Length: 231
Image (cartoon, rainbow, N blue to C red; front, side):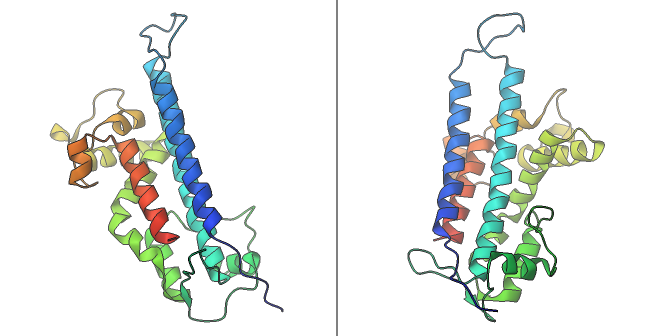
């Protein structure tokens, strides 16, 4: 089978960063609206609704992050280089196409992206599959952030689901970030509550000193990692 031209990769990073900018812009726009304390009020946005919007924005952010990981992996496996000339060194010949790359990464010759998915929520899987196909690669940068990425999934899952499991894992995420007294959450404490809280640890001293909230701290983390993966 003839090998096609390697796919490009810089646009994947740029599109991901643009999605981040849109999420940040949405939260800024919502924050600029007047708040109302009664549902019956004609003007303003109730905090409950603004919180729902923040949760959905974060859920979208995680979805685009996972898409970014998947799209870069398959492109690097076709031999893609950044505009600056960077490319992970392949251990074997490159994939013939994006479809072939999906088959290799999934170890499934019948893989169909429209009905299946790669395990990009699992940092360990990403690193192991990258180690398998590349002599060197940029996905090692995920290791130092694996706990933060794990907690991000827990926050996202709580936005999407009301199950007992998601509630328990979200509580674990709150304890991880804020260590509340007795490990108990206030009644009604949800994803937006945590995302609005100022960082206390895990994102670096600068974020703590600046009083950055968890939503913006994750935005900064994703920007940083995207720049490492597609330099």
